[in-house]
Length: 425
Image (cartoon, rainbow, N blue to C red; front, top):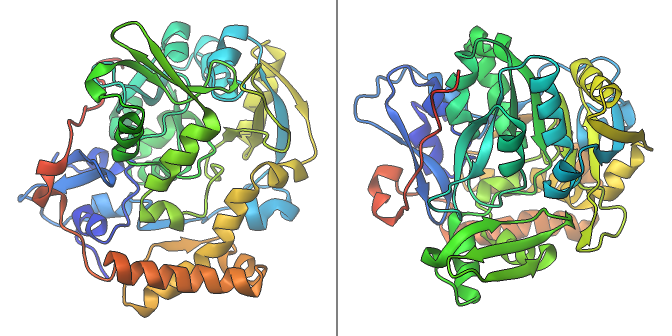
């Protein structure tokens, strides 16, 4: 199926909510709206001329490996994409380490790039101070800004809507995002050479999927809280793996363990997240996540698993260590698989899910370079059956065989969308 614009892509539930389409539209004809049950989605204005720029940068429609970095470890390629080195450790700065969701490695690398490499700043997502259960796109230039905006945000975020900030900056900048966001960054960079040239370092966080805003609101409801009572909200951090922490306007705090909060929120991930093979940032220079092969308490100092994926990433890690921003040790690359077994299981099921959807004539994303069929063959008979039959059942019961209403038709069900922060470059 050919798509004229991203509104059509989103109507078939393939949108990942990265925001790159809003950046790519030369007419400024795309608005991003937080559809409470789905995530951030594009609304295309009536003046669309069908140029296709938004479609060409959309990772929801097409996420594919076209080039493979040299020196990648072949034994990890089937499950984890390009991997050159795997490290474990934390930010050398205790405050950054404590504030980060794992060990603060991504924040430390961004700060090193700004303070020592002369990069202009870091484009990423942070909490919306007015509605802290939502996110906004921010451009951080100082240590305080990076620390204040650190930590995972398990609700919709669209950092690629701010790519113009990187393109217009007087010097290269850092980009931090989910795997799909980095994939969108790379696609957008091929369309806009100025963006590609000004992307100094691309960092990704590991991701198992992004729950909709409804997930957070329902969790608050379960705890007998209303969104209006919330002064600040952290999904984790302040220790590893940290606590879900709602700070209330009356001065009180409500906390849940990371596992309690994620166990509830993950049920609100949209369909497209279940079709995403890249959970560990395969298109980034460096990706960071949790070393779940070891048990973690709720308040112990954080640890990060740090994966170098490109030569630039290797150099950044090494120089940040030499400059005293990171404390890392090389570890057995096999620990990546032990730490993120759930992501490999999801990746292995995708071929069966896509096959079931194709039988119903549903458009599916183009995904190449992920060894999807080979990984699916490695599943047991029962797992293969579940990936196919379970998807077929959901297609029927949830009506996935039909297009969803377009964003312009359901804006009455949305909350406020906060546009990206501007004016830094």
